[in-house]
Length: 207
Image (cartoon, rainbow, N blue to C red; front, side):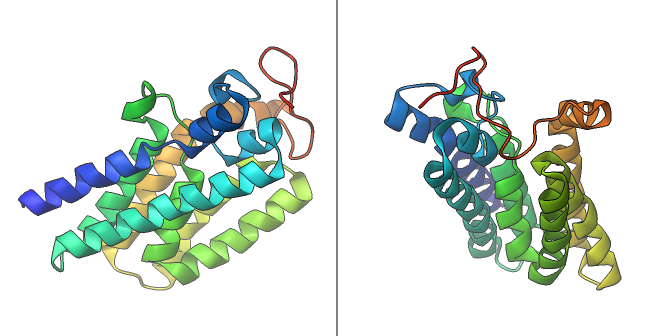
């Protein structure tokens, strides 16, 4: 039991490492949460810092999710729920990081790492549809929501264990909550599209 708690806390602390914030500070001496959309994630890193840093942030955030699941496997001693709970803890850390005054990202890249580790094929199928939606609409937020919405549906269709299903459902609830303002903007036709520019909150792109 103690190891389970330690694993959960360790996963949260790992998730709290905001690579977007750290990289922006290192490269430009800025707080990325004061630029672009204000989100500490890969998409805003793309807008503010460019492709290279965005790819790096995306990869590292995905790796956080993968590592958290494996922490749950290692300390869980066969506990079917703990890998998913540790994955959720990493997403909570990414969204509300203790190191950065609880102002983080929206957790999608970390969620990809978690779900791809727990249920590769359902996550892959949902991911393909999500990517296609981004290609056609250029709304990253819409693709993110499609991914977390379809993954639990594929899990049900493919008969995966209930702990994995409930993990994916909780992740989906977190994602929809974090994207609630994006949902409103999509409905109003005001959501930023991929490649539409990188204006900062102050109206100027950081270059």
